[in-house]
Image (tube, rainbow, N blue to C red):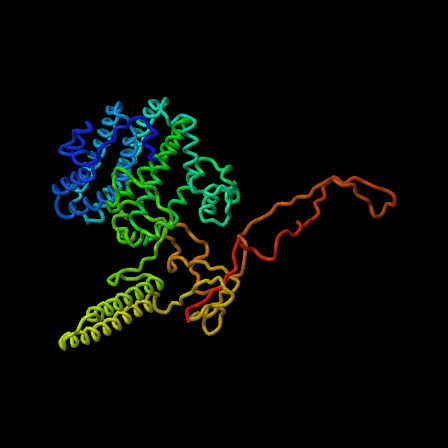
Length: 535
């Protein structure tokens, strides 16, 4: 059951053409377009760009593309997600929120265009950098103001919905039941999602506990993980869309639950979750009826329908998803393109493999062209020539790539790498000081200063400069002192007067040493590995 039925009647905001917006009485009078329509904002940017020339135009468009994708577009989705849950009696507040957003986005576009125009004699990168720097504070303000508007809108919705059905305890219990749907009540500690939840909420041992010990947020994350864990490149688009729809409903459920207990901060989080899912859904091909979504199929049902359902792999939508999703948090180690210079041996190896794969793929494609038909004499001759050309191309590209690998490290240098193993892998030799190799056993590596200048890029000095490459140092401590004082007036004895005694007027300060504390060497925390050099 869609969560919308839990709310009192809600006026859905139509985001599309200007005509549909006018019908919804949510038109904001910006010239010729509705400012929650992405094409409207893009049109404004393009219009400003046409007023610029040369480098200024290109730099402005590049900078605004980056600003639009990374900062403006996510805010639009957040605002749309909040407005979509508003009631028709909140039209005035909605219009004010949109108008404020439109005004600030327009100002940012105008400011960026002005900066580009004034810097027309600079390079594209200089102009782009200046635009991004100059608009940074304004984008921060835009996000703050937009989220403030969203929170004000949600506060009004929460106030109006105090008497709505989603605040009844029975409905709240139903939401909790929905969260537990398809979840095993007993702990399955080796389950992927259980492991992930334990990492997200450390210190509670949730991996080993029944669902009765889970809070609402923990149930939500566990259910969301279950919904998405089977998604992969070969998953049918319909199944991906259904999973995202269920994720959206879960976020909407949680938003209702948070509103019922006045948890405005959490409500804001789930509104953003709903906006994020809407971004992903819009990146998918339109394979679902927008008015109704059938229940998510079981894994068994998915296997049965894979052959008769539209199956566009996720990889085919990479361009759309890259625009919808935030930048990845890890390095995918993508190889440089053949016309780029590779910087490290690893990059050069990846590039060599990529180039060889390309040549091999071209060869197989050429062969496949003639595999299923009777080839004429000329076609056979053409194929043989293509085979010869491609074989030579493969040889040339492989030689070129290998040359890049060989020249990745400066001439005369040695490639050294640590390995978590008891011996060096094939192609590597131990750095043990034999046969001209450096001896790196039992030592730490210290980076040389900037080729003997004694100055680092951050201007920090180093008292140990002008080191020779490969030179060894013994351990040592920086010069320092310790104070240890013993003093006391003591009673003295005369060596000549037996039984006599006298008091010395002077204090006695005998020499003493501190006791030994510590280990046999000075060292930081470390882990033992072996260093090997390329053979």
